[in-house]
Image (cartoon, rainbow, N blue to C red; front, side, top):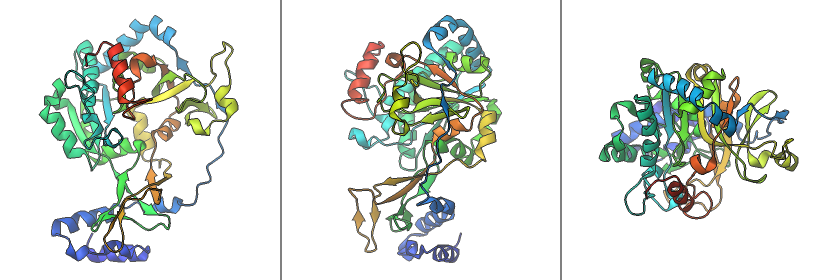
Length: 407
């Protein structure tokens, strides 16, 4: 895209202010900026104000395998999962685009040190968990690590500096998540600085499209990967490419699976896996009625009890089928730092505009079926969202110790 083309495009959409200061940029900065403009998804902006959510359908309890059945069928499930891993049919995607801001940390979140007597990083915890599977299967699992524009170099450098924590680097690929522009309440594009649009990662549902855009689909195909386990960076106890999970999903003829934990009480802030009009669906805690959240099963347990932990298994064939179907774009109010017309940096204390996100829960809803695979939260669920309190560094450390990890 040329400068003239950019000016014509932006002015036709009432966004001419974006080009202020363009001539003061270096040639390289101009090239990067024009590429940003060329990549704007204008259709996102049409969603502003159209926030009337579709009425939810009829909910039902999803198909699930609970802990007692998993224990009784462990050998069967594990054998099927190990076989798939040995054949090279299983890959994993680590969602690691975030920074450690909420932890008071200015590096990628995965670089945070949870050790007490020695260094033990979040990334290291995850790699150690994956290496347990590698040793059991005697085969490496291809690991694709999704970063963001803000943390890509720091993440790559961190892995290289630590010799990939013992993982074979031939099986690790990095890719940058696609970015989405931010706008103010009037729909005007915001500038992070002159010559750079304010952007943010396009949500956790954008991971597969971003992987394809980065040219890594050819690697997936060359390796013969048929299943991808996608997981978030912040749960230091989660099992990755878990043979039990993979085997149960394959043997049950499912195209996707979700690791779930039982809610501890009705108001716990977790998304719940359900069926909605017969299709797998995730209902956020704030979308649930009091009646639904407190409904009881015949045994007295919560009827809707399967909380998702952002550890999913997808059939690559099914992912290929849905990736070209437009996922729902969610318009989210956010506090967006920007530079004003005078070039002053502004850090708002209240929401001042919109970001546009794709969510993995919508990918689940596009699956033909989905298996709820129960895991024990004491052994597989130690999220790090905060420095102290619930779902914190403190609580994760306690759970790591409970699982025999030396800190």
